[in-house]
Length: 263
Image (cartoon, rainbow, N blue to C red; front, side, top):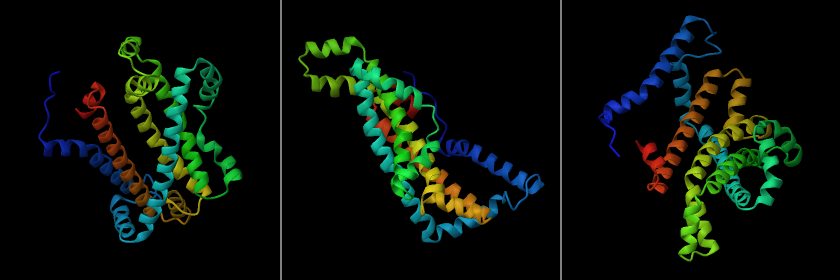
C-alpha cells in the first residue's frame, strides 16, 4: 500500500485547529452582533475567564471525576454484556430468534426516555446514571459483535478445525479475533453514548456530576460558567475518543481498518 504524503507536523496542527478557530470567530461575531443577547451567549473571552476560574478550584475536577466514574462503569458493564449477548446471538439461532426482536425494537428508543423509570427503581444517585449508561452502551455492542462474529468466513473456521482447534480456541482465536474491528467500532459508538447518558441523567437524577453542575449554572443564569463547564466536557470526551483510537490502532495493527485510521 502506498503511503499517503503527510504535511509537516506544525502545519498539520494548524490545519487541525482551523475548524476550532473558525468556530470561535463565528461565536464572537454572533455574540458581538446582537443577534443573540450576550447574557445568553457570552463571548469567548468571558467564557475563557470563567473556565480559568473553574480550573482554579476543585469543583469542576470533583464533578468531572464523578461523571467519569459513572460513564466508565456503565460503559464497561454494557460492553461486557453486549459482547456476550452478541456472540450468543451469532452462534445460536434459537437465542437469536428470541433476542433479535427485542434488540431491533429497542435500538432506536432514546435511552434518556427511560431515566424517569430508572429513578423510580433506583432513586436519585449513581445507580440510575450507571444503569442509563449501561442500557445506552449495551445495544451498539450487541449489534457490532453480532455482525463481526456472524460474518466470519467459513474458510477460516474450516481451516482452524482442520488444524485441530478446540471450541474454545475457535471462539477466541477465530470468531472474536475476526469480530474485534467491529467490537472496537461498537466501543467507540458506546463511548459517546456513555457521556451523553451520564450527563443527561445527572441533570435530573443526581446531586453531583458535571451534568448537575451545568444544569445549576443554567438555572442560576451563570451562562458563562455553564459554557465553560460544557467546554470541559467536550475536551474530556475528545481526549477519551483519541485514547480509544490509539488503543484501537494498537490492538488492530494487523487489520487494514487500523492502518486507515492511523493515516
